[in-house]
Length: 220
Ligand code: PGA
Image (cartoon, rainbow, N blue to C red):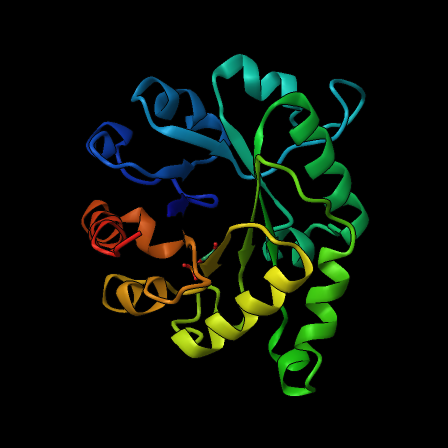
């Protein structure tokens, strides 16, 4: 069970206040070192595929490893939506990071329109088609309509999507999209839900701690 806190472009809590948690944090680049120093499993929010080069604003796998960073998110829907990330660049980022020895959480998920048109499985199949199984690769199912909206997939919807994802790529799958202390237990109790990727609720120490505690109570 993995509970990962995605702080996005927020400063997030004091990393030292999270020291007791067996959790992953994905802070902004400027706080990676603080989180590593606090002893937290620390992931970047994105990573480039080249070790170095003329790629303004990007960060490479060796640069992250040099900081003691353990892994990276790739393919978050905000990257796909606002920064032109494609299935192809997500695949390149994931492959390079894994080859370099980083762990990777690769995000997939459908938009509201895609779900309403009955295209969820087709979208997930396309997004997964560029990824290959790897022992350090974990997937995150993040329905775009549930991210930051307060709308959450029901545990049954999450379970159905996770089972579909696992039928294509048999890897651990985290659920993301408005995970909060009051809905975490129900989602995490589903057998195909292997953890959570938490945005807004990871910015508050108490709510992130409550979600981690809910995960710890799920029998493995
Ligand atoms: P949210 O974000 O928990 O605020 O919906 C999840 C994510 O974007 O990873």
